[in-house]
Length: 178
Image (cartoon, rainbow, N blue to C red; front, side, top):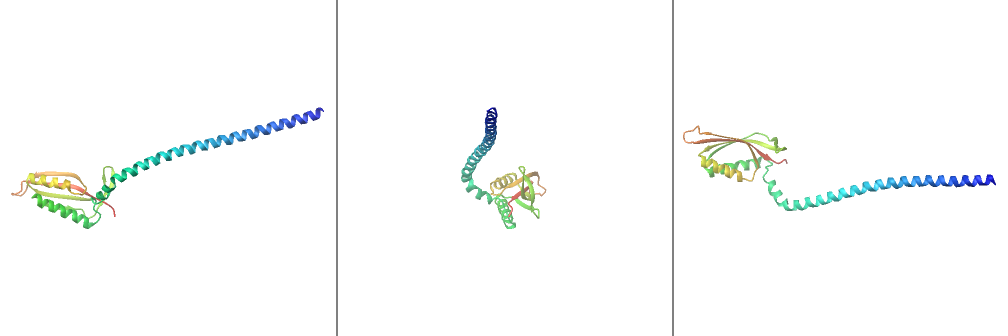
C-alpha cells in the first residue's frame, strides 16, 4: 500500500508541477500579449493624433489653396518670365519718371532666403531720378507680384548734372525650379 500511496503522491505532485508549468507559460503569454496590446494602443493613439493633425492641415490647405496657385505666379521659372519681370520693372520706372538700368546674372543659383535654399537670380538696378520719383518707383516695386530679396540699397548724389540722386539696389529675384 505504501508503494501505491507513493505512486499516487508522485502522480499528484507531477500533475501539480505540470499545472504550475502550464500556468507559468500561460502567465508569460498573457504578459507578452498585454505588452503587445499596450504598444498597439499607443500606436493607435499616435495615429489618431496624426489623423487629427492631417485633418487640420487639410482644412487649412483648403483655406489657402486658392492663394497657393496665385503665389506660384510670383516665381518666374523661365528666361521669358524673367524678361517679363524686367519689362514690368522698366514700365514701372518709366511711369515713375526714373531712368532704370537692369543687370541680371547670367544664370540662377541657389541662395539662402529665411534659412531655406531657393533658386534665385542676382539682380542689380541702377536708378536715376529725383527723390519723390525714386520713392514712387520703390512703392510700385513693392506692389509687383514678384518676390525680390533686397540685400543692399545705395543712395548717392547724382553724377550727372540733371540728376539729383542715383540709387543702386542689389538683390535676388526668387525663382521656382521647373
